[in-house]
Picture 1 (spheres, helix red, strand yellow):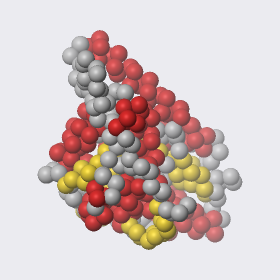
Picture 2: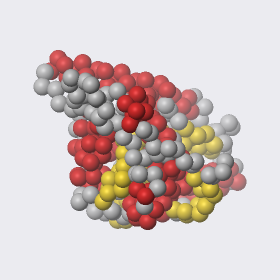
Picture 3: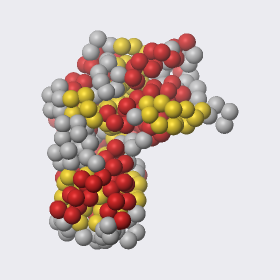
Length: 359
């Protein structure tokens, strides 16, 4: 295509360029390492002069998520980005948006924790993203990129899924993916939607209601218990539809595998090299990479339990996704965890040694 570009850039920069190109209406964020390049790139590109996209540095992460909340109420494509402690500050607003069934994109480029931790990469926000880090029974749609190309590709995908299901979506990356530089094919430009298109696509939105006697009201508040249960049941029905239709994953060398590694993000990249090393030593191992962390590929992991002797959950944390793997296999085969903490990324030899030691 004429507007297709191949360039070298960081994962964080790819997020920014993809947001401009996919017709994003507004970005509201606050700088925090290791994701600050998202806001910095948007500021340098000045999309308000070309596409009309609003870019605003809020005074805090709390402000930025509530600006996203307001923009989402109008049916606009809006987003924010942050890193682990900043996303913690956003949890109340994210829960409100899930309860109000609003589409939006939240990008979390994870750093080590808990607390302020380190600016080095980690995957220790899995619980926060996939278990509903805020209050109430809710889920985010969570996409886990493993390359700079996927950082770019998942922006439009996240918006598509968010609007399809009226649900916030999160791109859960880590500092390694955000900071590494790779070749990337940027997506083609999509025009921003007109007000007429927004009204047609989002009849629930609070704007464009000319001629209506009462405006649409968007809220997550319901004081009547019976009505609140009806709302919750409807939302849970929606989650079941997402689980049935939107699971995404990658398989690598699983055809003859006797052991499997399950890993996402940069840990999955390490796993692929570990598999090469292990197979050279006669250990038949393959990889299942969840691309959607929620919905989690439960059926695919369950299938592995009938094929392999054991599963290693490779995570750059103390062990979080391993709980979902154990639930999926229901005790039929051993499931072990290996990871490093403090922002240390495991090397392939360590992973192979863990396979030998744990099984």
